[in-house]
Image (tube, rainbow, N blue to C red; front, side):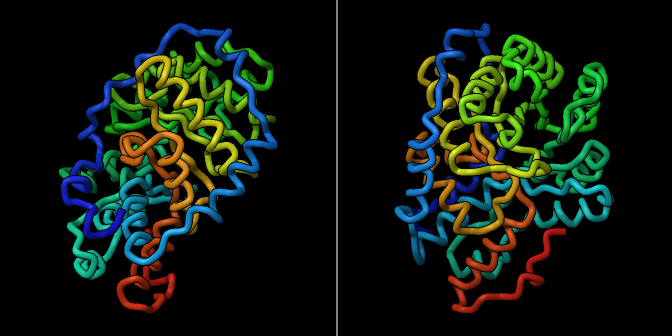
Amino acid sequence: MSVDTYSTAAVAATQLPQVTEPRNAGMPLDLNWVLSAQANTSAIERRAASLPARRSVKKAHQAAWLLKAVTCIDLTTLSGDDTARRVGRLCAKARQPVAASVLDALGMPPITTGAVCVYHEMIAPAVDALRGTGIPVAAVSTGFPAGLSPLPLRIAEIEQSVAAGAAEIDIVISRRHVLEGNWQALYDEMRIFRAACGDAHVKAILATGELGSLRNVARASLVCMMAGADFIKTSTGKESVNATLPVTLVMIRAIRDFYDRTGYRVGYKPAGGISKAKDAITYLALIKEELGDRWLQPDLFRFGASSLLNDIERQLEHHVSGNYSAAYRHPTS
């Protein structure tokens, strides 16, 4: 992909609500399928380690991949000191994530990020700031990040966030169900959350750094998809270990397996710790190799990130001008 072949139509079709895929309706829990899922850790780690060295793109091709990455970012603020003004600035950045002068130099039309992700209390200002843009608001929910509040409260939180205007809900699963091998409980919980979301798309956060093994990651991925998850997501960003390439490989191969068996395409969202432009390209290359080009659109792939956009902007400006700008020139909020 190069900048001059990155068409206007491709950019225009990047956001929900231009989704054309049928939603994952889910299926009955198939324990035989779940328990047959295994993970060869050493092979997975070798494959993941080889990717950054083998997939290096330069010049116009690099700029094109970075522009693609921008359209797949869930621009996120999940801080205790969030305010309506901060969220408003974040939304302004989502509407114009890359300077117009840089886009003009690249021959590109305007682009936006894939979504803006906030806590429930910040949904209203985000919805107001993004009105008419087509950029969806995503809300973290279900006792984020631990997911240990009472189930009725977690359900009510989803329903209130949907009522407030969130088009996407990022829920957290109960990790204990995975660690105890209680797949029926995880499935039932996920089905309840899916129903509470209604028309809003649901992203199931697995908190992979707390699941104990790659095999558990594979099995939890399958169970959440069987229960109707529209996306599966690595992390809350609050764990000690967040998105990694080995975890990504396991999760997207589960997505591929689910698609092969059911015909439903489920999205993928790595979150936490992805802050460098070169890392974004590595993740996109892995998605392209394992799932194909269809998954390189924001209705099926997102980065959960806050600082990633800053580094992408710096790289794009360097491509255009030959100089790196100071990081403070690219604030997100």
